[in-house]
Amino acid sequence: MKSTLYYKAKKVTVNALIHVLLISVAITCIFPLIWMISSSLKTQETIFSDTSLIPVKMHFENYVQAWKEGGFGRYFLNSIFYTVSVVIGIILVSSLAAYAFARFKFPGSNLLFFMFMAAMMIPIPGSFVPLYVLLTKLHLRNTAIGYILCMINVGLSTSIFLLKTFFDKMPRELEDAARIDGCSKLGIWWHVALPLAKPVLAVVVVFNALAVWNEYVLALIIFDSKGLMPLQVALMTFQGEFITRYPLLMAGLTITALPIIILYILMQKYIVKGVTQGALVE
Image (cartoon, rainbow, N blue to C red; front, side, top):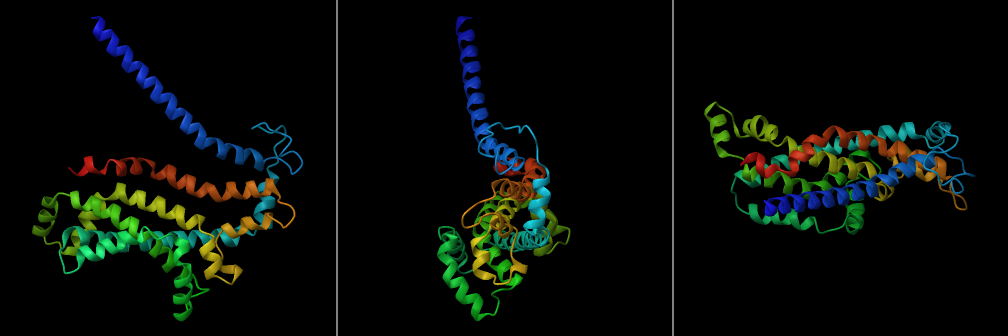
C-alpha cells in the first residue's frame, strides 16, 4: 500500500515538474510576441519609459500609419504571391522526388538522394555568389520567376527528406490495391501517397512558408526594382540612419507575423500528426 502511494506521489511530482517546465518554455516563447504587440501600441516617447505590457493609452493608429508609410499593400501582395508559388512548387517537386526515391530503384538513385541531403549542410549565404552569376547568365535576375526558383531550390532538400521518410513506411498493400484498380504510377502518387502524407505536407508547408515569408537578404541580391520586393523590405522604412521609429516598426512586425501565426494555427493539428508520422503508417 505504501509502495503504491509512493509511486503515485512520485508520478504526480514528475508530471508537475514537466508541466512547470513546459509552461516556462511557453511563456518564454510567447512573451516576445506580447511585448511586440504592446510596443506597437505606444508612442516614440513612451515606448522606453512605459514598461507595462498593457499601455495606459493604446495607439491603434500606429498600424494605419505603418501600413501607409511602409507601402505594405504592394509588398504584402508580393510576399503572398512568392509564398504561395514557392510552397506549391516545393510540394510538387519534393513529393514526386521523395516518392521516386522511396519506391523506385534506378541507377544513381542513392547518390542523387545523398546529394540532396548534402545540400542541407550548405547555408543560404554560401550560395549567393553562384546564384547571382547563374541568374544573371539566364537573364532571370530582377524577375519574380528567378526569385521563386531560388526559394524552391532552398526548400527542396529538407522537404524531400521528410516526405521520403514517410513514403518509406507507407504500406505497399495500399499501392497494390490502387494498381489493381487501374491506377498508374502518377495516379498512385496523387490518389494514395499525397492524401496519406497530409500531416507531413503540413510540416513542409509551414516550414517553407515561414522561410519564404521571412526572406530578405536574397531578395535584395536578386531584385533591383522595389516593386518586386517582398514584405520584409517595408520594415526597413522605419529604421533610419540616426533614429528608429520603434512603435511603427513593431506595428509593421505584428502585421508581418500575423499571416504566419494564422497559418500555423490552421495547420497545428496536422503538424502534431506529422511529428508522430511513424505511428500513423505502421
